[in-house]
Image 1 (cartoon, rainbow over the protein chains, first blue to last red):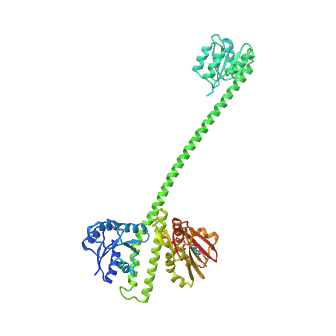
Image 2 (image 1 turned 60 degrees about the vertical axis):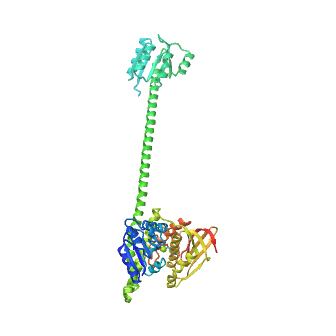
Image 3 (image 1 turned 90 degrees about the vertical axis):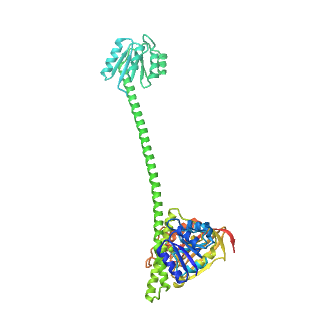
Amino acid sequence: MKRILVVEDTKANMYLIGFVMKENGYDMIETTTGEEGVELAVKEMPDMILMDIQLPGIDGIEATRRIRESKADGEIPIAALTSFAMTGDREQALKAGCNGYIEKPIDPKTIMSEIEKFL
Amino acid sequence: MSNNSLLIIDDEESACETLSDIFEDKGFSTATAFTGREAIDKAKQGSFDVALVDIRLPDMDGTEVLVEFTKKYPEMACIIITGNASLQNAVNALDKGAKGYFIKPLVMVEVILRVEELIEKQHLQEELIKHRDHLEELVSERTKELEEKTTQLELANTKLKELDRLKSMFIAGMSHELRTPLNSIIGFTGIILMGMTGELNEEQRKQLTMVQSSANHLLSLINDVIDVSKIEAGKVEIATGTFDVAALTWSVMDSFQVAVAEKKLEMTIDAPKKIEVVSDERRVQQVLVNLIANAVKFTDTGKVAIKVRERAGTVEVSVSDTGIGIKEEDIEKLFKAFGQVPIKGRTKEGTGLGLYLSEKIAELLGDGIRVESKFGKGSVFTFSLPTTGTSG
Ligand SMILES: Nc1ncnc2c1ncn2[C@@H]1O[C@H](COP(=O)(O)OP(=O)(O)OP(=O)(O)O)[C@@H](O)[C@H]1O
Ligand SMILES: [Mg+2]
């Protein structure tokens, strides 16, 4: 079973992603902070990371940078969760080491195929 | 300040007294001096409007007193009085600054007239100076006031601009916050509609679809508001990259197939296979979507034609339609925020932000949007982007 780490501070979003993943047979590791996201990435070595950009504490960009800098990185694919109007976020996310981005609002119809692109 | 004061200088005491009496009668204050020295001392102590100077003085020549006075007290008028008439003396005295010249025996009326005339002149002079000074004062006062006003206005202006920027930033931030809960609404509606939580009956599906489409509409409104406020705050980000604008146009057009079919319109595209441009793909897409959406929205019969063509270093994209058209006088309204042209018998669709935003974006990416339209016949909206070369 593929394990996906989701770093997302909005409860409803987390539930939504979790629901779709469970339906599709994925395992989800969840956290609401960038700091814990970095820790879990290193400890759990998930198959992929979904990283929200706006987070309390360190943001998704900084968290991605720290994961990329850590020795245990292992080139885990990281997809940033961005919003349409925040053009700057996407660029920064890619620069920090994200492999791509998935745009909010999360569309339950397409989210899995988007995730699969990173696996 | 002139106070009608007279200094009489004559070595003959009786002559002094006569003059003094006559002028005191006329309301003058007078002082007398019998020698040049005394005259100079008296002039030093008090100021006089007019001095009557006898040429022949026991200690010095009256002209010396005259020279001293005109040099030291330019405001004081000197009149020379002499016992022996000679043209040379007269010319000499006037040369040295005398304002009058009388020969003894004096014709008093003439002397009085001359003195009064001189004093009158001094009055006028003083008046004039007073006015000039006052005027200068007024002018400098006004100038200062104006300068102060200008600084105040400049300050108010910068404050206003800053406030306006803050307002725009606030709206952008606020709208951003609004999106988070909206995203959940859209997401969960999607999950339920997909049947992932169980079967839906027809009515539930119909109503939930309406929830979904309203939520999507709200989201696009919020996105527009964010864009508008960002543009107004000068904070819009343009992410340039190389992309194929022909392919983009094809794909945007495709997304309108359903809407076009529903309205039984025809839609055509005339574009090369590939044209690369260096621009912001998402923003170009946004403009294209707005223009094509408008063309479809405001056309009831006929067709929507999209053209992409290369032209001397630029790519020109045009969207034309056979729709309701726009009157000449309404054209300027289109590009204003919330600018819509009300048409009798047509329900209002949209917000009126589409063209406002598209125009701003097209200006950032190229040189704005051009419109040609005939009321009742149709419209053409065109924008262009700079190319980089490779096409085919
Ligand atoms: N192709 C067109 N034909 C006729 N009128 C048009 C066309 N495009 C725009 N207009 C006029 O210009 C107005 C402003 O257009 P704009 O795209 O800004 O707003 P909208 O389409 O009404 O709303 P929104 O785009 O925000 O959903 C429209 O309301 C309409 O009156
Ligand atoms: Mg529009």
